[in-house]
Length: 207
Image (cartoon, helix red, strand yellow):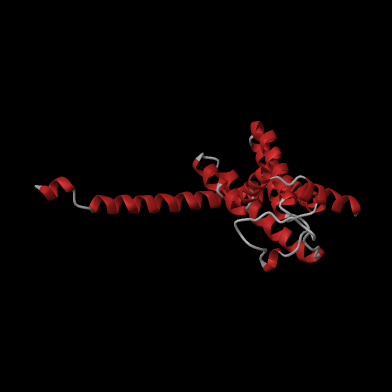
């Protein structure tokens, strides 16, 4: 597809700029699964615990399926690229292929899922997802078609998880998991408090 390569060349080569190199490199890092996973404990301690569990499983499912799809399509990474130096070198063996973009799939899945729960964040989430996808083209990691494919797949997965929340068997098991995690947390907290109470008081030691 000539448009796919032409658009890639325009974004990766013609838009080259040192300031944009830094900006889009930061976006690529912020689009990794490790950064998205940080939202899970944030949601948990904000008392949005079912959403935290859903997001955790959504991220894992998207990662697993996109990795599988990469091997099925076996699309090579872009050639003749202006690679922007990243804090990590090369690609792992399971991420050697290009289609679909895992970053785009993850970003759009999370954007759709979270915007359904937090309406006021809809526009920022989708702008963020778009910029992450654009960043992967800019740094030379993906063709535009990889990003489009990832965004579509991610949107489908986000929609499916929104529907899954309403599926009684899943909702029941999720709430049981939430209760179990809360129970484990209370036990660990109670144990640490009990151990702390056994420590000698500094005032009494001085006396």
